[in-house]
Length: 367
Image (cartoon, rainbow, N blue to C red; front, top):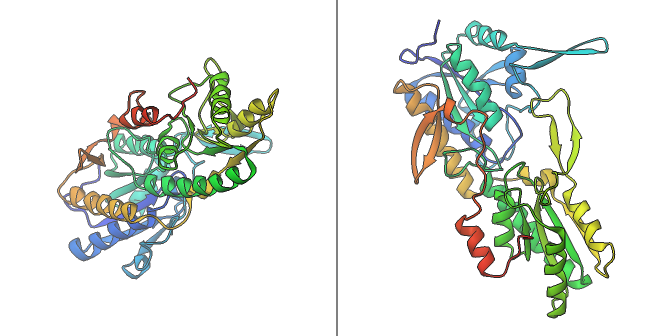
């Protein structure tokens, strides 16, 4: 039997997937709006879908979410390896996958939860859409540093990740100039190049490599050598972890067999640095920023965006809206059906204005 939003008295909120600056700001906005405006009871699900599977659900009070606006990470914890539709169960040396979505639904009902607020990216929303089909009233809030969720103009966490990456690349500039080196800086983004593009342009990097525009290593080498001929003593290359050469494959760091998203990208910076060094007098170093991009205090923009998303999720829910994702579209807050974005990603168009601007100021994309 479907959960009814019109008589909503008790809601639960969870954060799924990788952590992200601004998650606590959403939890705060959801909880405070629900309690102060609608007198709802709010419950937090620990460690994302894993906590829902294991029935780890606790009450959240107004005091629990005070003073967390500026704190990175999530007070509820998260997990990016628990997919309710494909949950790994190990017996001895054998691991099999089991659909435990009905267990999750039963746990929500047992706790008297009328609606579920899911904060997450494409994987989280894919599971949220599955719950919606089973009668659970769901509201989604878009979260990912990668900015790769479709329809919404931007996701919170992205601005902080870009700021962190840009500041790191700015620092790399000085050491590259001092030692006359080529620095290859690898940033996150999975299969989309949004972080690399924005941080690369903002830091004035010389070469930007993204998944959407496969590169030629010869073109990258040529761009670096041409800079050297013109008296430029160093070069900065920003590469997205999902970038790949024309006709080649992405660099895979490892395979997590029990994870919903088993492929872990990484290592492309080391590969490019090695390729540029071979047969040349170039001195190259690879810098992999990694999880530093996920951490730290969210920027003011992300705090504000996360607050608006959390507040809007409750407002829409109390108006009877369900099974939707809150989005910022054309600078307006609205919502779209979860089914429209579940399991889909937004990539950088090859003719994106920032790509065109970067090319116009002399930035190479290795093509």
